[in-house]
Image 1: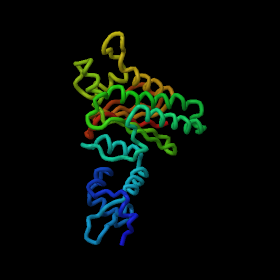
Image 2: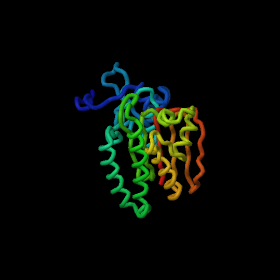
Image 3: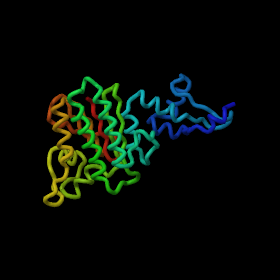
Image 4: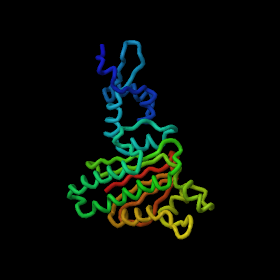
Length: 248
């Protein structure tokens, strides 16, 4: 018999868990038998449920970017923990300041953390700047794992191709738009120059020998090893909006 306290805790259906973890029902059943992720039944005949906190704990153990990718690539937005969701720019800025304080205490990045924070700020603000009309929900995913030295941002916006093609109608593919976003300045209306943010990101990711994975649509960019050359490939797993993973 389950307590009333458990009855009121947030539960997820098996279908919701398959979407969040991107696994099959058969995999969940095997994990249940092996004790990796236990399901519960509120009554002997009721459908299996999962505690939300258990699901996200497992996902975080695997990789923070998995949470972001599940959220940004799903057909409709799945629910994510509130501490990862920045609905407005103001919330993002407050959490960015918190990241700055945490990184300032890390001796490994004692001299470079202000630039790392500025890179994160450029990517996050780029999402807010270019997604005035959000397709479904506004805001961005923003999380970091200081033990793994990883920072992840994502948005369910319109994507870089849609944004840049409004001022450069020759752009037809996501990989073309991604290259332009990181290498050229497009002027939407003089004297305004759009797109400087990601050029700034490229410059300091390279100078600081950081790692960056950036995906929009079916185009995936990799930048690392103090090499300014962009490696852009096409992936069979497209997503809505943008996903950025910074490793420092």
